[in-house]
Image 1 (cartoon, helix red, strand yellow):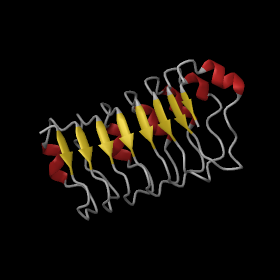
Image 2 (cartoon, rainbow, N blue to C red):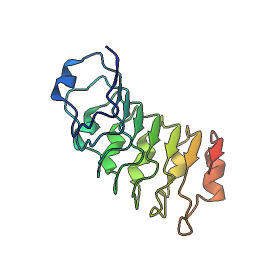
Image 3 (tube, rainbow, N blue to C red):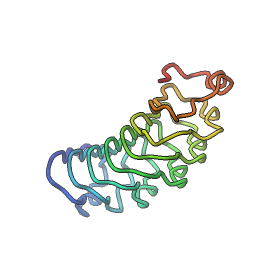
Length: 166
């Protein structure tokens, strides 16, 4: 089994037995009450945990070095650890509609990142000052609030692959 959908099951945590699924690449567990994930999902490439009760990105997630896509939309995330930089294969991060107030500058080490969605985080007022180092970025969704400091025109010019900015 390489894909598993556990949507809408009232789960508070993901079963530890998932670690036995060594070929699991895609895990979708939206609309639950999940606050943690088990160890051992080392081959996971896509993790979707939309509409759960996550207040932070679980630290053991940082061991998922094969992860390419991370979708944590509509949780209660207040902070993203600088350790997210360990997930060097990430190509997509979607953190739409959380409660983020800042985003770690270490994100620029994610050189494969193509898609970053931080929209709907109304308390987020800035991105890392070195955001232009994400040269593979194609899509960047930013908060729509009066306090947000947009990327500068100089940064925009250095993001040569950027096609969508809103």
